[in-house]
Length: 376
Image (cartoon, rainbow, N blue to C red):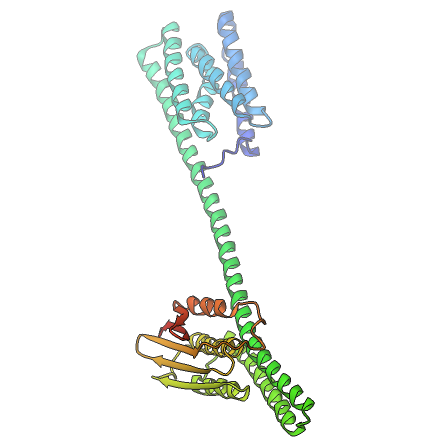
């Protein structure tokens, strides 16, 4: 984005321009204008009027300043050899044509060219020596260089302002992305805990209700007690979510054994195999794998009730792999229509956030989910 052209002059700039008007008036007072012809007086007046307009223009409109600069350059240059007062609008035009960023460099070069020619015409008309012309020309070029320097300062300041704004926008966008990522992470944690715990509770309570209707109160009481244990476990899971968000350590073997026990208490079958050192995994990796295993067991209860689930966690020097598989089933589970289908998506998001991959699909007569996560 190009630098913004702030056309309205600031208060110090306006005061400096008015000072130029006053200086021109003071010089002209002692300049012996009575000896000049009417044409020279008209041109000096036009240069002074242009200087006054340039100084007091309230909006700093580009077309007004361009016209004023052009008039000062032409008539100030044509009369500078006859009147010292014309030197003020001449030099103001030479500075402003470059210093104001709302004007192009080409405009500035054109104004300087006009001034060089006008000063030459004035010097010839007043029979000034070449050294006098060169002196006035040197003054014009010097203030033009000062104007270029001022222009570069303004452009640099504007670019710095834009960089600061862009940095602020980038920080705001980064904070927003971090907030959304954290919300997604918390949503996955809550989903995994609730889907696993509440799904198990539904199965247990349905079984207890069926046993009560059949008059088997003792077995129904066992199911209720199992439901209570599952609820306690869910509470522990919720606490573990908080611990994971605080990056506390997770004991993989203990937690996987707990998942297996809960699945078996809910009437499921599962085989667990742990290979490799699980004691030095990071908290985020451990929680991601634990929640993935939990979601796999929940999905098996929903879509393949009664099928045995195989969980195999393998840890090596480079990566951690979790394989969950179960036989496909024609039976429709009580919970098959529950949920929002976010389980597998949550696994992909969770594993993907750690730089891992998830492969899920049918392999022969089995449903297979393979998750890999970098060790570090």
